[in-house]
Length: 586
Image (cartoon, rainbow, N blue to C red):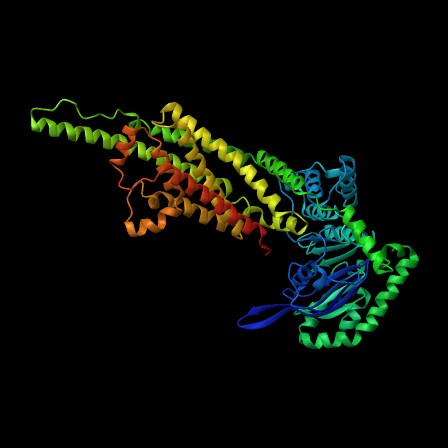
């Protein structure tokens, strides 16, 4: 049994404590199908998230099978399933692939036969078997709701929480989903709680919980709803609620609570006697030892897969999504081809000869001065061109890094948070992102270095230059990944990442030297400067001198550049780790 005892969820608003869930006390037996209804803003979803553990209760207690969840820990991922309002599947995947990924992430299977059996069973239960090879993006609203249910059922949860899963559906699809939830509640003593704004199909529920301003106004059999509120039509319940303050409804319910719970128990006994509800499936554990044995069996059957298993599943899924997104593939190819070509278009001046001063002293002082001016002019032209070409490569790779990861986590935040709730390890998730992005970084950086060198040889140590190009791409990719992990929306992450790349060039000091009192504070944080500076240090002595003749910014040693870029990467990964661990449910 699931029991809520005076549960509250309180927030601070305008300097005062406000109870969004206000002393809710209800009992829900096993094998029970309950609707949570009420006007908009009454606390339905908030109560659901409080039960799920997403909102920590401010007061009261949640009791599950005699275990106080407030003191003895939340539900295990295998005990509870949560189906949110949004889609929890990726559009480029098929139904079967979505369910398979959910299974591999949530349930440790002994072999592929067991895995396939679990997937087929869930697809059959939810009626998705005939369309298992269909892409998620072409599914109807009702089919997507079924898919969301299927992805939660892979772990055989004892409690299934559904948040507005019938919203936006046509009447037929809505009834089919409610009927499906009803049938799922009859399986293995599963409790199914469904938040809904609709008052249709209430006869399919075992009980109705009506909330008003966070308080319980009614919890009883659906056939008693109209009688309790003294209305002739169910649609009149909400207007009736508004005629009295929530405190009076709560007080009235507390007076009639016991009598309505007796009605619920009688209805339950009739279901057991008729065979619609198996007594063995809803029986409570006899003793504490039996309860412990049962828990240990569940933990063995539904053990969360290990780090490497989750990592492999996530990485495989990410590559599959990437290659099926033609727009993303074409964009990456276009960037990979066009950016190096752009660099080579401006590289002609960087390949010019750098004249030296004549060893023979001119007898004519005027001729000597003219020669010096000519040599310095040539050095300035070539040095400026070389410095500009290197910075151009650096900035383009910084832009590639931003494009790689600005939306990588923020763009799939709802799905990630849902999978984390189901037992996904943040470490496996972040490492899968690092592995995927590292492949892009290596391909982009090395291709840029080789292509530009092929059409205009780098006038220095090519390997060192390639390393610094690799590091700037990695630095900006992982910095933007951290931004993506910390921001709530993809739009926020993209905007901030664009600004970050945009300020790399002017703040680097490679084009225009900044005032020293500003440069001291900005330079340590500008990845583009350290990559550009390290590449310049790898130039041949004569070329290096030509660059220094036109750049006022003092150049740092290669070791300092390598160290600083490495620190940037490690700091970015640390922030990304913080962002992936931090709960960010809407």
